[in-house]
Image (cartoon, rainbow, N blue to C red; front, side, top):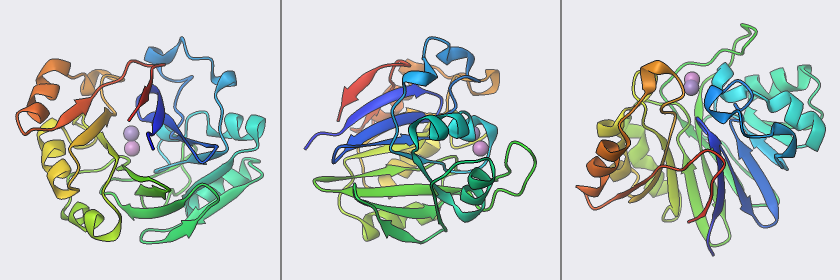
Length: 229
Ligand code: NI
Ligand code: MN
C-alpha cells in the first residue's frame, strides 16, 4: 500500500492512512514560503505536534477548531492545546504507544527543547513512529542525531518512509541525517526543516548527493506538492 503525503512547507505535512488524514506540525500562515497555501482548505482528522515551538504549533488551534481534529502530542502540549479551546486532545509521553483508529502512534526521543508560543512549559520534544496496515512512518520532529535512533528498527516494522530535519543550526544537518538514516535502517528519506529561515537555507543538490552517495534517496518536495511513497 503506498503512502500519500502532502507537503505544506517547513516541517508540515499530512498523510492519509485508513481513510484518516494525519497532519503534522502545521506551521503555515507564519511561513513566508507557504503564502500560496490556503490553510482553510487543509484537512485533518488528527494533528500531531512534535513539540511546542511556534514553527510547529503554528496554525494548530485554528485548524483543530475548524476540523474538530484531535491533537496528539506530549501531555504538556496536549494540555496547552485544550486550554486554547481545542476540544479533542490525546497526551502521550516519551516511550508511550497508543492504538488509534488509523494505526498506532509511539512517541520516541528527540534531542531538542520545547516551550509553547506563549512561554508555557512545553514538556519534552518527541518524534513519532506511526504503524499502520501495510507500512510504518518515522517523523523525527526537531532533533539532533542521537544513538536512540538505533532503537527504532528494534521497535517497529521496516519503515516505509522517514521524515528527518536536515536544515542544520536548530536540528541535524545533512551529514548527521545521513547517519540517522543508517541508524533507523531506512533509505527513503523526506527532508524537512530547511530553507524557511535564513539560518537554515540549504543547497538542495548537494544534500541529495550526500544521500545518493550512500545509495539512499532524499526527497525534497515543493510546498503544496503531493507524492505517493
Ligand atoms: Ni523546535
Ligand atoms: Mn523547529
